[in-house]
Amino acid sequence: MIVAERKPLEDIKEMIAGYKKILILGCGTCVTICWAGGEKEVAVLSSQLRLASKKNGNELEILEDTIERQCEKELVEALKDKVQQVEVVLSMGCGAGVQTIAEIFPDTPVYPALNTKFVGMPEGEGIWVETCRTCGDCFLDKTGGICPIVRCAKGLLNGPCGGTNSGKCEVDPEKDCAWTLIYRRLEQQGRLDTMRKYYPPRNFQAVIRPGKVETLQA
Amino acid sequence: MATAFKETLNSGKFVVTGEIGPPKGTNLEKTVHHIDLLKDKVDALNVTDNQSSVMRFPSLGTALLIKERGGEPILQMTCRDRNRMALEADLLFAYTRGIGNVLCLTGDSITVGDHKEAKAVFDLDSAQLLHMVRILESGKDLGENELDGAVKFCAGAIVTPEANPIEPQLIKFEKKVQAGAEFFQTQAIYDLDNFKKFMGYVRGLDKNIKILAGIVLLASARMAKYMNESVPGVFVPQALIDEMATAEKGKGVQKGIEIASRLIKQLKEEAICDGVHIMAIGREEVVPDILAAAGL
Image 1 (cartoon, each protein chain N blue to C red):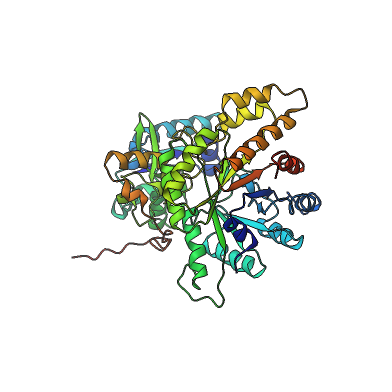
Image 2: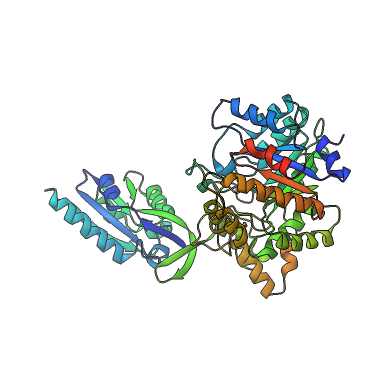
């Protein structure tokens, strides 16, 4: 899933300064799961902004809503009436959500309330880690289901660098060395031969940025 | 034509390489002084490439300087700052200027250096860089295009004999051998029993792989402890830390020279490996003393 974090309140206040009526829009999918932009977070941000504007003697009118997915055109289009009532939309979706709204309502400024961080998975309660770089040429069959492109700080394909230290990464001793994890996993599965193979440089044409996938309709 | 360094590697002589760290800026005075001090005392001089991710005068420019002063350079190339096109172009240039030795490294992380917000490249890794050198030698580039004039290099790599765990490191080492690495310079080693075990493995793999043991001068017991605790892949035995602690105040470097020269002497006398790579890291002035004390 896509993992995001809310921007600092000060940054958000600066973005919407001067506006009198806004819509804070949450997203019910990835960012709800990672506690960044779901219904609950919309309510929290809304009350923080209301409080702040009152303190400054301003009257900020806030509409709140959360839709299932901000990156789906039909679901965003259904917001037409609400969007017409406000000056700006403050999106609590990921970057894809912000851009879908901006595309559908080109006359209305859309501001991001989140910083979209990465594609990842939960590691523990309230902790998410990056696990996919969306490289477009999945390498996981060769590495025991542990991605070195994203989990090795240098994205190495042929084994660890000299900075690996007792199974940890030189860049951040809190993080595991991906190649130590891969070695142990492949050893456990009796597949170390896979690690002994030489892998040529990556093909960065696997996704020509900006990426585009065209699926033929039946 | 083989480089002078390659000929020395093949001669069976105990090989000695040193290291020049380019300056932060354009004042080359100290660098020239270090080159002149060491060029005739060692078989070749490495030039570090934005060492520790700190931006400096380029390794290519410093290698040229060594060449101009009559020395034999080993051009260090890391994958951190340049993509495959830039690395290829630099190798074409290096070859035309008589720089024939290259050491292929992955490179430190950007975050340990002095440009922490820069974009790390790592388009290639060290094994892929070695492959790239061989492809350029075949008259093609990595895009499979024909070159008008190829290159020829004596290409080397690095290995960390004290890496923990060691198995993944050895798998990578073997890939580098298969990619055509002709010599290896190791991370600093201090424990000869451990190093002998590593050399036993290397000799069992392929008798022709040339290994130059990494020697880093200890300057104090504190430095020895720090290396042990904080530098990945370095192990300083307690006995050496204790020995450093016996040095009188201000005589730490002297004690370090004693230890380094003793290690080198034993490596040579017992024919444990093919040579040494001395990394003085700012204390280039004492390298001749280390060599003299080791009888080289």
